[in-house]
Image (cartoon, rainbow, N blue to C red; front, side, top):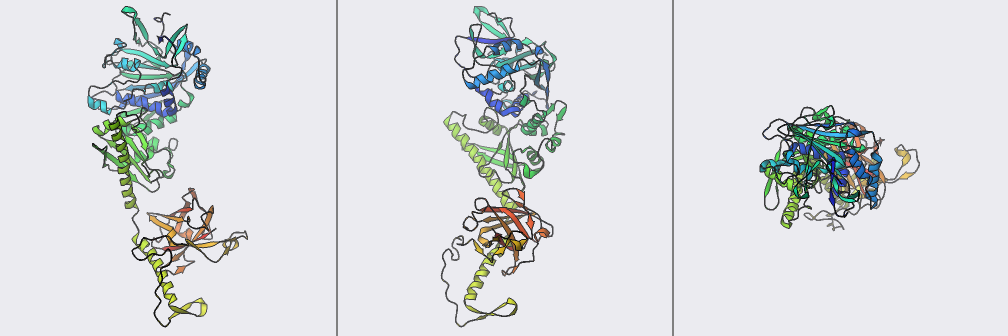
Length: 638
């Protein structure tokens, strides 16, 4: 069949051997708009003009084009019509394509960059020269061009050469085009479509089709050459640089809000450092405007306590307001020095570290082992050596540091050590911040200990005394003859210097209280217990107080779903003042930390506190008049 008059070229093969779509298509399809935006923005940053101090400018547009104005589309549709699926996945994918080809008006997205170099050597067509970047981008899968300047190459985001297929994954037909204008003003258009190996007019063909011209050489050989760009204005590129055009844009990708968020999420450092400006339709994201997007409720959650899945607003705040410190991380051979921008704030619900390349692209929101729920936020950026090493650890989609793709056992071992050491060093920083921001309240803890000791002392003293009851329920003690007996060590008790063990009875039952007596109309009797100080942990941090109850060893309480909690003041001598403390007057809000919900307070009792796996946790927001030196005894009702 004569291919020289065709716009789409598929290489003939003897037989069909592969009946699946390229697996990388599915990988990028699962990344959706964030993967597409990340890849094409990174490509634009990689192509920046060398020696130019200004930003790369990327214009992202969404719109509609007539199907008839898409070059070579009829040939693509002809190929799709002859595809044969041999498993459920390919059958479904082929049917989806066929359902889309009858559209008259077709959605598209384009990525056009400025202040970039574009591709070189288009006139040379298919070429083995490393200087002909057109040939590498247009006709070679799994390969990316390398810069002669090693410093420039190190800083580039691309490394695996598979990101080009991200654009195909965004199209219902796996179809994309790229328009190029080089330094001499030459304008060309290329493109690819990713299908499966197929039979067309009794000839078998490879899965990838190229939008390109073909010329016959001596010896019946052929060579691809690009078309000069005289096509519809959507495909035009009149200034130096590259433009990606993706027709038949999948519906889930056609979302301006998500495009803007994706740019901010992955490239906030590039934008803040004025290396990149992005225009999405008519909305500009620059160093001057990015804070307006990350602080806008239309794009991001603004309540810090609710930032559990998206961290960009926190990262921007951390980067702009925290002074960097040096974090040294070793791979067992080399020590890498990173700038760490670190912020500790108790209301932050999830701790993440933005791992960022020097080009300004975030690789991942890294979880630090055993610290994913600690209240911190951080941004980590290295220099040239650190950037080169991070680049070697990136997975194919630039979304994670990994060692799985490294084949050399020694290099893989070092990579694994580096990633583990990164978590270890970050854990030290987090631990330091927790101790600094939550110092042990010596006065509070000492008094709690004194309270227990004093009570024990009074019990011991009482054993050696007789009690005389006088009026109004007061008691008077007087010495009995003889010295007190030597106290025997009780089970579970410790001598001075011995490790402290938990008391046998975490809670002690007190006089039963009916529900009616605490304002509940039900007549059911509730059991009330006093909590032993051993099971209560209490910390005051700024204007917040955290209290945790460990009921795991209490058979009376640990199986209950909820409890009510009340408290009374005690002084240094252990004297209790039951009616001296009002919850509403001292706490503005009482929150159940397990559910995140505000607790109801009735008759000075905190109601329906959830018990999960034997634990109950409260967060109490302090009013300005609160006395932080107060000590309490806690009562639990179930």
